[in-house]
Length: 209
Image (cartoon, rainbow, N blue to C red; front, top):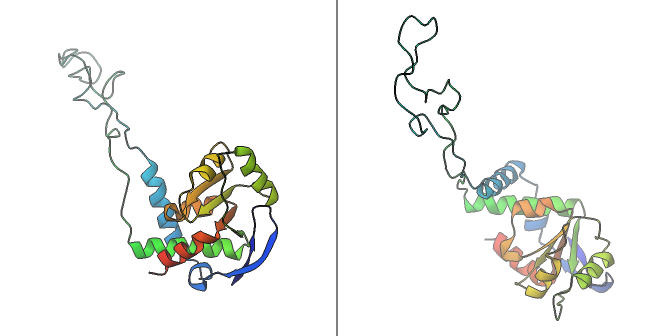
């Protein structure tokens, strides 16, 4: 499929690029997408949750009342989970939520995400541009020119560009990543995907392996 190349003023440069059908035109595999997004979100979890169990609660181990004759259930410790201030039964413990996925499945998931965006016509190809200094105002002007100022957008750079990244950092609805930092979650989380020309070759090379 072909896509027009726009400049950062939103104007047609008169050039077109060919988007690989093997990356942007496949039949999306929804289960692969689900697994990759699930892994991404699982990796964001710190897993530092902790509740004290019976053996960890501070308190006396003295038998708090006699065994018989009270008319109530027997109790041997104030740390009993049934009492206020007692330990938690099967409480959460620190652990990692991460899990592994095959590289081929992750590639399939990213290709599926790109194909979904292409099918929805939510991919914009932009000629490479740079800022001399970080400028949020200049980045907002780019968003306005592309009619993305009120939409969640993801700009994909061919290589790390510090000034462009810093220019977008204060904007809630837009984010900038390099082509090697892309994730299925980031692609699908954006309403519009803005691919700089230099990123296309890297994306297609990485996903065609």
